[in-house]
Length: 472
Image (cartoon, rainbow, N blue to C red; front, side, top):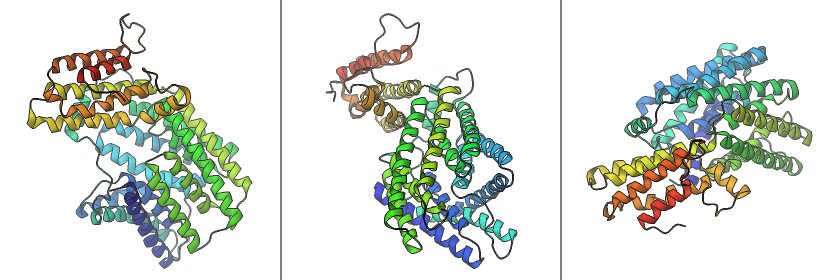
């Protein structure tokens, strides 16, 4: 399924969630925030929801409903006692990130916990003012989570390929990858990331409450986007740049709409869902498109009246900049993870997998599984490629042989040899060259590196020379 088609299925789930909840709110005589919350949850779930069976929908919906109630409680606390609510909010998101250390199920649960909490930053929790009082308001909160989950799951069942692809590595591949990584002393990577996120969010709340009381949510949301899941310091900085660039473009777009046309009613709904479709579609190309789209949508959803002026948007940009600084500072100074170290680790894993392909290329029945494992590690490596490619475009020469971006390119070029390596006349020489590359990775930047240390780019080029491929 193409990116445009996937964006269409996401939009279908979002619109269905919004319409269903809007109808429920109308029946209950309630205001629209539960419908907006359900739509936002559907957007987030659609990016993470794998294909499910219809029989699994009730249990998943019940889990999300319970989490939605807990998130609504946090939202009420943020409204009633902002500082206490901020503490609970930060603790909940940090624990959700730390849960990644305890396996796929804990990771999935942590993701479900995150979604409603982040939705609070866009649509602050408050009573829906239903006719039945607080009990109906609570029921609508539960329904928002249930409807979002059910609609995303239903679209995934009815439209083949609409659900996001499952994690690229099956359990066997993940276990093999874990076996390759020796346990290092000190906190795990999820623990480091959780601590960084806690510091970033705490700083963002403090700055938001003190400087941007009307837009503290934008500061906290940006800190979360920049710091959550950042694969090293460079990745955090890169995400901050994209977030700021997208927010600036979205702000300009919103101001232009203000000058030319103030959407309302059906026109506003069409504009919002149209922008959402473009944002989902283009997100795979660059996160800045998504940041631009969501900034425009949030501006339309949160504007105080029929018109909104440059002053409010300027303050929002300042709040976003403050949040980006909080996120980047936490990633750089709180138990920092260097991007080049992440790349070295993933590059080493990819070379181990490639060496396995070469060593067992004569075992035809096992070749597809070994090749899939190698492709999984290449995908993991590609996940950290964007920041270093951007760094090379801005600060370095494309011809620089030992830039990390070049390492990634050379690793990816091994893919075209992996299927035919069984026919190579000297697989032993290939394995020796791979071993030299792995040692170059291990010695890179080390104070006790041997004098004859080979640069990583040179070592990888040596593998290609033996394979007989032409480097691009």
